[in-house]
Amino acid sequence: VAIARRAGPAGSLQIVGLGPGASTQRTPQASTAVRQAEVVVGLDAYIEQSSDLLGPSQEVRRFPIGAEVERARVALDLAADGRRVALVCSGDAGVYAMASPTFELLEEDRGRRYGDVEVSVVPGVTASLAAAALLGAPLGHDFLTVSLSDLLTPWDLIEARLQAAAETDLVVVIYNPRSRARTWQLEGADTPVGIVGDAARDGQRVVVTTLGQLDCTAVNMTTCVVIGSSTTRVEGGRMVTPRGYAT
Amino acid sequence: VAIARRAGPAGSLQIVGLGPGASTQRTPQASTAVRQAEVVVGLDAYIEQSSDLLGPSQEVRRFPIGAEVERARVALDLAADGRRVALVCSGDAGVYAMASPTFELLEEDRGRRYGDVEVSVVPGVTASLAAAALLGAPLGHDFLTVSLSDLLTPWDLIEARLQAAAETDLVVVIYNPRSRARTWQLEGADTPVGIVGDAARDGQRVVVTTLGQLDCTAVNMTTCVVIGSSTTRVEGGRMVTPRGYAT
Image (cartoon, rainbow over all chains, first blue to last red):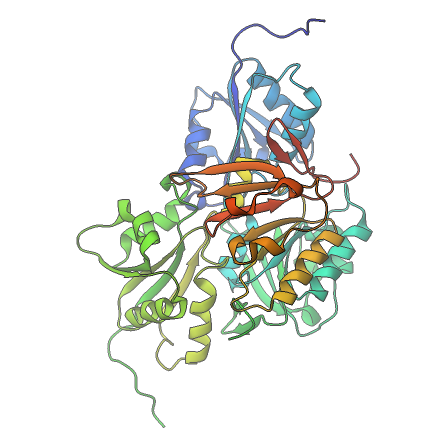
């Protein structure tokens, strides 16, 4: 059985991590990918973040928040039609971003429509690294990266991960903290906590506090929260996790 | 009791993440920090990685591998003497790199010598993100970042972290895997594993295999290893972790 396929050469799709916000934290590889794209696809906010790269000959497809799968499908469809496409994400392209839903669509497709599309990923500075740099060195030792969004993950599993991190003395980086802001108050009132909002963007906020004094109303979806381990110290407003235990 | 302090204005120290290797994956902020430094301090390999940025008027202090604390001390001393210093690291400056030992020295100093030095951190694309981009999208959901180096961390604790990750179905990213290469063969022979050596450098190697078929001799200290979760799939040579469980 022959499978219908559009005529013409297939295009390409680069899934691009723009970094946390400022263009100075965006890699040249990411900038080049956006500049050279015929079509740029992304959330409104990430199109804005790319605006210094966009020229009049480029087509732009803006999306409202949500709709990850639809965005990925539009980007793949455009590439299947022979276009050179950049799908832009904030931070890194693979951490709670578009690489994963795009490859899931590719897998479902089984080569029917997207088989000839060349797909690649351009990494970027993810929010946790930008936040950590502003806080000092909270990620100086092993850490868990976890999203508190329970839209697609059972809350019990998220809790088990936080619990396991506490039991094995890991630093924890939390993405999407608002979803369950009130429930992630783990034990250890004196544990240092760093909160960074809009890292490398207008309105950047950096707060170092403790679990006991944490004001959850300061936390929203553009916030990255870093919870220290037993070794994390705060000195001069900086949060520092030593690189080991034997020092 | 007056504390002796050198005369003259204190300088600055930027701890700079150069990204994984290629200059196209180095942020403009990192490049500017190195270009504008009067003195550049770093491991031989990271000075090489900065060579396209260095001019004849810049002083360069090269170090052999190891000696993190000495490197940090030299960088801080130079800044305390009024110099503008860049301390360069591969990947991100805060993940198993120089930010943490530098801030530890600052803390020990208690303002005696380094009190007026302005210290900041420039984040970068860490090895795990560069590796993940080459593998597909293995970090599409929560993950543990862990170093297998037991120089400063009890091996029992490292094992407990790996065990906790396996029990809570986390993806695991391993830095410095060689130290105990034979011992981290966890259960689950079919679990996908990605191995990336020298990401974005000459000699880059990308292998997707399984825990059961893993050849530990392919792993060394410039390798980043990504072990999948129960949901991670391999398709067309790509390793993809879906962004949730409910799809």
